[in-house]
Image (cartoon, rainbow, N blue to C red):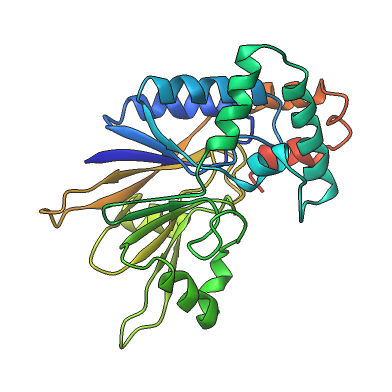
Length: 272
């Protein structure tokens, strides 16, 4: 089995298309999206339509709900001023559309599940404890109580894929003699050639972000998973993909409700 896991597209069509083009070359059987299709970026309608098409074609097996997806349909909670501006503009864009296609978009967004468990894998947007909203940051590896809870809520699953923070990396469950560990994307890239082995220890795997990376690398980030239950050579491979950032920036700057928030495009230029 070979599949791709993507997350946090955030209405960035340029990044989405470039990532899909790269995924097409990886010979994967399916794609799983961990949510936040919407928010921040300039192309919510196009991104939703593309995701619906990919699901209908069988290329995307699962598209979860992220906190921005939920906020677009319901009252947003815990959002800063810039995120709120993007949520309200996104909602206005979707509500400006009429007809069956517009209804299909709302139905699709609202029907996205909050978590999916299959075989030895768990897929969530935030965390195993709070699938929609909990952030798991690299520094949390030192918070024993939090890590205990996160791995406990994985239940019988061996590997849990998360997004939400936009910071790629792997958390490793503790053993009797070793505490929790965290491996950043840069460490995985430099020391393991971009591939992290899937062994017998439980892992929390943050796949990074397609549309708004925040690890000071502006390239889109996603993972490819190679898994065979009868093999010892299983791994998760991180992929970084360049895209036309200038086009996304220009599109944001054309939107009256967003153009005054320069942080929206500064952060995608700088990957933060």
